[in-house]
Image (cartoon, rainbow, N blue to C red; front, top):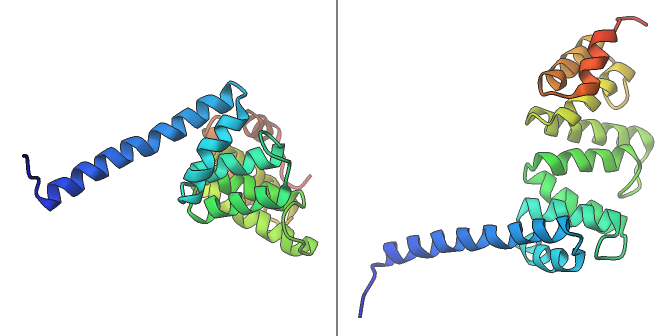
Length: 178
């Protein structure tokens, strides 16, 4: 009989667990892509409950869209928030959008705008070009942030450098003070 030392055994279990952890997520992505939403949900729920931020994000979007589950904005918001607080850039972007468009818990307009700006900023800081572009729009309008054309231009430039076509087009046409 082969005896493994505890440290070696722990390492083997950790490696096999991480390999198995990625497999259900890959399978869930594939199931979702082919429109097998029930299978995707079945794979995502245990991962999301275990704290996997990508699974939480995907599950939140599926609740939002009513894919494989009853459409439920509150569940969508809750899953998206769990992933966002873990630093998942895409979840932060979606959570910001939920706030911007009035989904989630009821808050006054000013607080909703601030929360949207906060989460767009978190996502933008991680290089999400869509969030950078929207943050530029927020700075241009002063919605949820102090209005600043300089900050707007900075975020549009970051988004444009990330390949965001609308940001590139906007920068080519942007005239301060209009």
